[in-house]
Image (tube, rainbow, N blue to C red; front, side, top):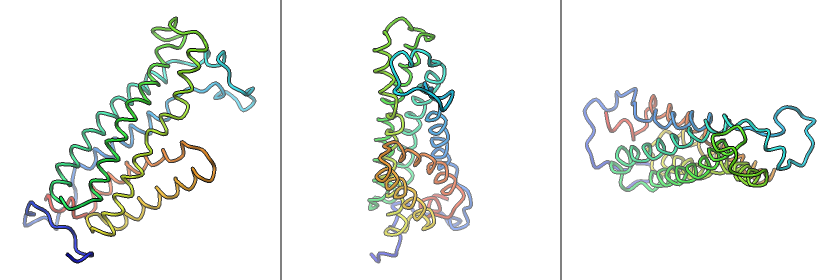
Length: 236
């Protein structure tokens, strides 16, 4: 097989495949990205009301947090985890089975499934904070120190949960430049975003920066839906 030739598909394409302009299923990927961004940003912080907040944050500071953003974020996180699994299943049936020789497609799948698992944990902790804060349903369950421990769990875990999507981004790049299964523009942007976020994390030491890869889900889903990548053209 020539390295510039797309991997063959086990299922034949229909005669009108090359004229295909829109494929709906990749929009599930975009939906995951949108929900991921909303869930990520729904949080409360003791220092959110002004830049003159006195550091360090103490257990007593956590008692003043509003439980609603945490409850909503936790619920959205669970929805996101289920949608990520659905997206991985869709990718498995629509891409991996049609192009069984694609290692890039497998990397995409593994990254999404790993993210779903981490999202379940991270946003479960967020939901727990919303439940146990003084204004929550079980507000009398833990004292300030107990709540503080829960809060620390949610400080970076919802951001770190999206790190495996970097592997998915590099998988798309491999599919673009080595296997020719997605457009090179998408592959280039995927690799550029993943690499830039990793370098930003290493330079600044902020572990949550790579979580912005979740924005790439929105772009990737739309790109695949309206673009002319072989993985979607073959299904017309």
